[in-house]
Amino acid sequence: MRCMNNLIQGLLIIGIWGMTSISGMADESEAAVTLLYDHYSTQDAGVVPGARFAAYTYTKNMTRVERGGRTDFIDYTNLVLYRYFQTSDECRIYRLLASDFVVSDLGIEDQAMHAKMLDIGSVEVVKVATQEKRVREYPVQDKKVIWGGQAAVHRTVTEPAIVMYGQLFSPMVNDYSVTTVIDRIDDLFRLAASHEAVYRVNPLLRRLDPLGLLGGLQGIPVKIRTEEFVEEFRDIRYAGGSAEIVLPASCHLSK
Image (cartoon, rainbow, N blue to C red; front, top):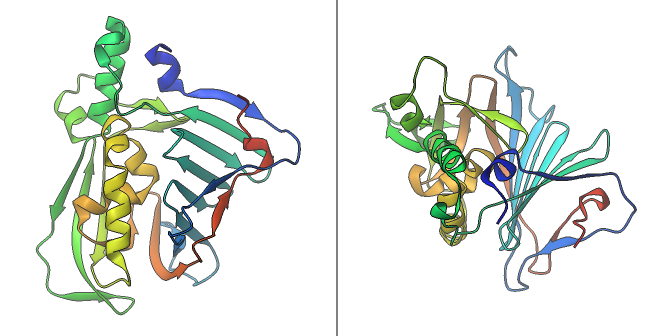
């Protein structure tokens, strides 16, 4: 088994390869669902619809998260995260832990690293008592998402943080305005439930893939506010059952 340190750092391959592409296919009976959001910095005066966007596309086996110049592809069947940078055509590939992962198989140091990952990956959703309101015509309930609360409890002198999938994760609190009236929301809840075993052993995926938060939020985010950016729901789109998520050629994983 790979040591936990390799899994925490996660990097397997950085490739700029040929033009062959591979794909994460949805079952032909399943539609691909895309949630589109206007995306802007918290430093901006306001949102200019369509100027910048974030898109979350879901099939039965894979999620694609597009934001700025980076796209994450999360393959829940093969347990791989592909992080693709459009400008450089660079793809970084990270292995995810399997749901039957056994912590006791690790050494002492790696067990401590795994425990730290679980602490920082912890999530708590708190309902905010507000009057009935609407965001972009949707009735919403405001909620706060507390990321890494367990790490804050166990913190020492230094701020708790961990590097995973090539980025730094630390405790934070984000604001969500959530609705339950999005068309075919039950399809997304079922899909989220099917990935729950993966989220439990890879909890930081919930920060990358909003699907991992649906159970706690009990709805779809219409507005998300973090320290760095704001996203406001724009549209939901469905593709046919034969739709697929296609990986860039540089994300082809060598066997």
